[in-house]
Length: 364
Image (cartoon, rainbow, N blue to C red; front, side, top):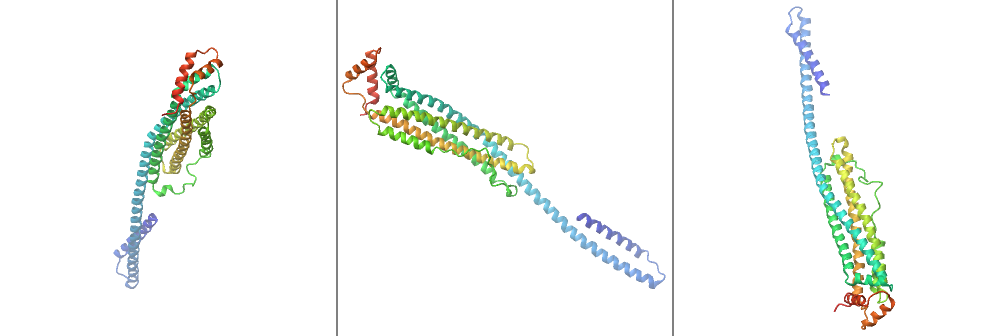
């Protein structure tokens, strides 16, 4: 538009120049005809000059508007690039939180492997105690001081602490990504789809409600058991604990997978940016938030399940400590066991009896 207006002004200027030349070269002669032409030329010159002035004023306004537009666009683009730089800084900081969360998942996974093995050993020992053979004596020896059950409880408690630490790291990551996203101008967030950040491959939210309910029933059975049924109920309890810790391990593995996906998304976001790619990068930020939320939800369910497992193990420990399995006449018990088990020395049985008494006897 400015170009066309400048062309028009140039045409007007050329016409003014031609008219001015005609006035300047005016010669006296046939006065009537020449004066008429002179007046027409002067009038045309004035009219063209007014048009030139009017066009110039409008062009000036248009140019000022263009300058303001460039200035505003420059400020907006500076704000956009500044916000994107801040977003990159936020995501760069997330790398540290994700790495720590992955490390914590690995630690929790290692604890779960050891805990599963420990629960299997305790379950085997409790099963052996219900039998009357040489394995019973070995199992009683191994469980008499209660160290294995305490170790299992300690492992589960450590897992709970580790998962809590991992949740804190994930929450910090979500906070950082959200900070970077909220700082972005609305102009580049417009048009984001409602399901931005989700994927068709996303798993369903973790749900351990049925598992916790089963463990609570198991704990109830242990608490209601008597001297004859406590060992069997405890063995079944540790069988369930072993299975549920296995489920915890699977959920930890899936949570670590979320963290690995976060790393890949951050790497993509930290690449070269163009305004054309802005929408896809914004979706990547939303994806990070979604992955973090899934990881947090899984971790919270893992904690619920671990706490239910700990409650079962503590119930086993408490119930066994409350029941006096040892009759007053220990010699009768030893003789009875000796008659039933061939090849076991009486001194070994008496030694086991003393340990078993210390472990199972009610605390005074």
